[in-house]
Image (cartoon, rainbow, N blue to C red; front, side, top):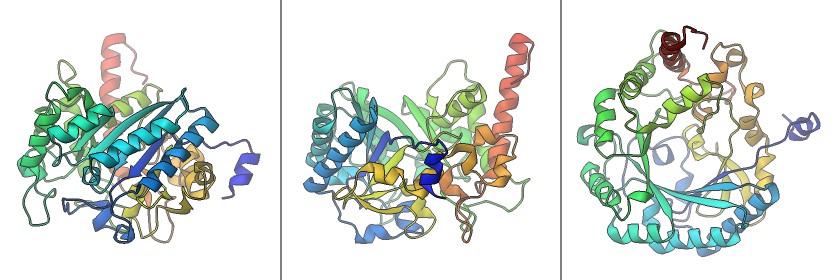
Length: 394
């Protein structure tokens, strides 16, 4: 695929609107499913532990440059890792200050730190509040569910420390920073119990993430059988609990995205739908990467060869690998282009399409699960529309 040929045909790349900054490349937990440390790419071993002041300021300059060039009204900056809080409050504060200084007055900057929650303290939250940095926390359910995988290197579970951090975050002085929860699905965890246990933390929002597997390294419990849909069934049970509540207890991103797409709207995440990818990553050394979950596929899968030291973000926009994730239907496999749920599923999350020898131009490894889940949501919504209006044409 040649990007210049695409542009000659009228295609234009969508500017980046979400910048994931790897401010810290190490973690204080040793989660056994982590795509960064436990899967195909081991480049973290060669990375600096903490993003330097120089790289922070260069990255901020590039973000401001990109936003001004493309008149981007809202930029999301996600402080990530590893465990970003290990970088220290001073580093996080410098990132926020530097990016805001470099941004145009017309660009709103929204900061979020994605943390495992174990290092949230009043002192840390005070700095995050001062610099208006929202907080999203990873937790996989109750103590039994969470501690099956999310452990310290010595085997201790992290749940108790995470709950302590969440309680500090939910205090009146900091609750306005509370962005939500991320939960990775484990088939051994009951979906309804997991959902209810997450509600105990009163999240304003949450999301369920499929484990990072692909055709060459299938996720746990997956079978090469179109009638086997354990992840779709898990999502359906959680969806029905959420959708069937008398009042909405929280937002669930995947579920809301699915409903939005079914009614002709858009999705806000890359898990589902055909929207163009607008996320770019900068590692601790300033190297520019595609979405870093690609590291679960093979060594170097997310690399671009670019650095904030010598290239604007526009250079990454014009890479074939980046363009492939902005092509919509044209970027799908033949099987996906002919699928009845094409516009809703969107081929599934790009990371989960990888197969050694053929790359990413495949359906997601979760194809059967996604068809089962989307079909169930479509049927349930259609039944409700029919009941209310007498027309079941969704």
